[in-house]
Length: 274
Image 1 (cartoon, rainbow, N blue to C red):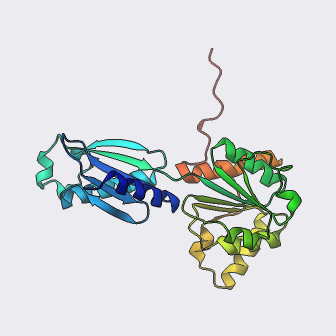
Image 2 (tube, rainbow, N blue to C red):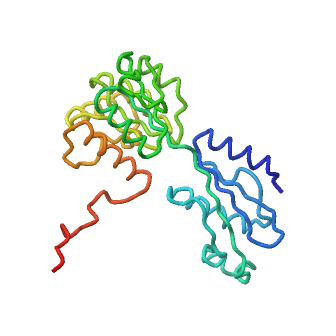
Image 3 (tube, rainbow, N blue to C red):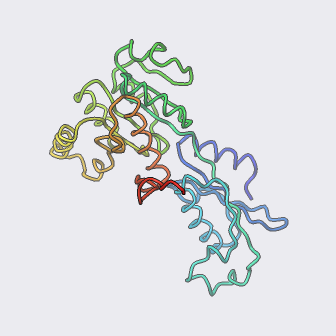
């Protein structure tokens, strides 16, 4: 049986690594067993007392962790047991229920570039409760004059050093919007193999395609390049820095939450009621 301290330490470690952790409990009188399942690692500690029960709980925990909308859920064993396990003793225990509690790390947004678009993205991200860090090698663009929100962290260093100083995890989202394509490419090279949830880079389709082709020729694996959202953002016809920022954040929400990116009103504007 896991102690409260062991559970607390496991949560702290997982969140510090930018990974979600599911705590699975049996909802039975007197039951104190717990199974801990970490994003990307599987079971890291504990047991529910039976191997088959652990297998069922693990499978469901992985599904819940992958769905960012889930924080707490209760399932009857009959709801989550698969066909291969129908003949087990568990199938007759219809009253058995499992509680899943998901702890998620704070959302991290790293913005490379403190210009007009970077400033607008930082504001939009704060509205969505992201922890924001801005990197720019120009001191005047990584300053409180440009980013007055004290909760936004500023790094006034060259982009490579700034990125190396940060811990990039599965809870990280990277937005590359520097002042030029050379700096954009420098940032992309630095983070392309990092475990970030989202990597996006600004630029026209022609220029971003040129960068992709160059990196492919240099041996960057195609699967890493396919992760990069570039040109960045959803196509909403954005023109101003603020509009571009909302297009970028909308794409990040889409990646996190899932969705189509299409209008909900698939048949056009709502017809005025008569």
